[in-house]
Image (cartoon, rainbow, N blue to C red):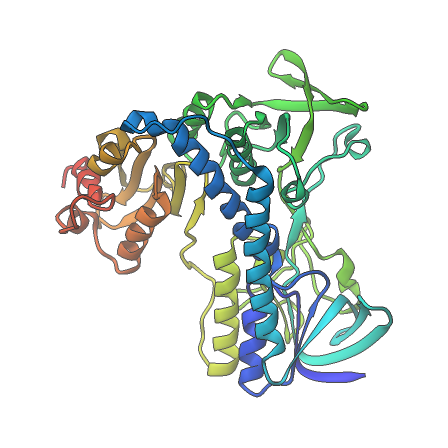
Length: 460
């Protein structure tokens, strides 16, 4: 039985840098990965989807080029080339991460599936056969999540797609039905619509992006429907069947009953933590009712020396949050700091086109908390940079504290919405009040310059 100072289960965006840093600090370290180095982000999430979304945006821009006085002729897509470009980028990122682990002195990369056999003991079913037992003083769980399979009659009898398997399609679906109207479903839906698929998105709530403010949801709804994407809300799926030619979906939306036929169905109705293989009952680590690992504000479980990082612990499921988890744990353990996840900023960006960049609280949350707040809204059709570049869809929205004048949150549905949101995040981090942003000197003509105009909407 091998003993290590530290073992990391899962080579995702928290586990990989943590393993390297611990080994570089002199700790005898092992990292166990059952599939690919890089986790969801590199292999099935951010990297491949954003690469393909860039191709879909190029198609859209080409179609809009006549509005700018540019004639491009017949627009054709080479889906094989789009997929190959995506695969090449994924392989580049993955191999670079794997090489980084293998070249780190004092770090062992083990490919296999780990499960707890005792509190600080793991049994690894090796991918190349056989079994290995290992122990460590510190164990870090970074196993992530996988697509949730909803309980729908007939679903398990059809060849459904997940956010992983859809990336392996060799041809563009004729009619893609997406179950779920949130970030993953909307990104894939718009992307394949631009590639030429007919797209229908089914959302069980009364609107897409159910957690966002209604004006943001409605603005994106109009943008997507104007691209001929069908959105069905209040959708209750009753049954799914498949024959050799097509998939049939029976559903209700309000009082209306419908039957939709499709060539492909994508499941995008949530993520499930990957804790089943870990046999956590053997070490005593506690889970919540959805299977997420329970941690304290320092990311430690109820068992001393066992930590959980990234999506597997619940909370915001973003790559940058997983990476921040690593920095908190490493600095606390190795540098004696006292960082926690309490009240850390949670920025995120959905890469529909236009993007939705979000930071802080929404107006809905400000109302629920009964805060004394003000709202500033600026349509992108009033933004000079947007008009000049023909990017006028969406809006900027900010929530501010009426008393302190601090910025509480923002939703930027705009071209480069994530970048504009990041400017406001920096203001929030530095306690820069909205009136100072209102009179700040920004370079002209940029999108960020319109933050002047956004905060003009509030009486100072």
